[in-house]
Length: 249
Ligand SMILES: NC(=O)c1ccc[n+]([C@@H]2O[C@H](COP(=O)([O-])OP(=O)(O)OC[C@H]3O[C@@H](n4cnc5c(N)ncnc54)[C@H](OP(=O)(O)O)[C@@H]3O)[C@@H](O)[C@H]2O)c1
Picture: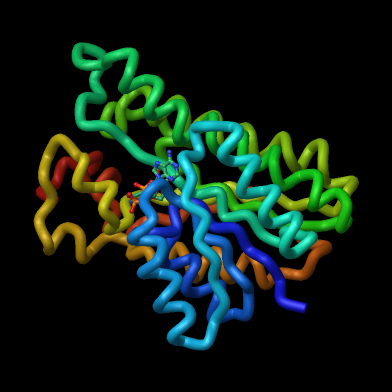
């Protein structure tokens, strides 16, 4: 029997790399994002490599849409071994002088509410099968308060870190494990929303989506009696640290 993984934000960046990597590791993957086309492209690449993939587009800020995907997984497979709870976004107008109620809803709704909806939706399956792993993509912005990522993103990602730890505190008795992954800068499309544009050379020095996927695959490969509670993963040339040294980036 194949292990089942649900990857959110699977059409690009970290989610795409996780989906492809996990499929190569033998997982049957369910891919979710709002746009169908990138999901279909990722699924086609997985299938061309001999893997199994299903696309389930959904706006994860809507609890009912999240439940529909979870119901599909429960009905089709009867289990969910791994949730890569990864969908997220940021906005350009992220400073307090520019924040709008719509921007607040977008960022908190996608990065925090949707992450809660997805975790909540897979828990019944994981409790029934007496095990399962969730890996939530938070951020260094979930550990450190800075102005770079903006108030809403920073607050939402702090919430994801706390959410993950509470899952372990309550659900460890059911054999359920929750990891919060906190990346620094990763070279993905989300960086196109930075107010300051980044050069190709700057992006090449960052962690790459495949590096995060390698970490997720490692965590998923750990034995069921071990829980990796939290991991920080950053580029070696960490631009935040270098800025603190007062040297040129
Ligand atoms: N790149 C970094 O430097 C970095 C650092 C720390 C943390 N992160 C986190 O890493 C995660 C993945 O981001 P990424 O860097 O790989 O950027 P990305 O390529 O922009 O991926 C984000 C994905 O989330 C999906 N998504 C956004 N809103 C959604 C919604 N309402 N419902 C369903 N799917 C939605 C997007 O697909 P659709 O647009 O098709 O919906 C997209 O595929 C995010 O949680 C991000 O906050 C990134």
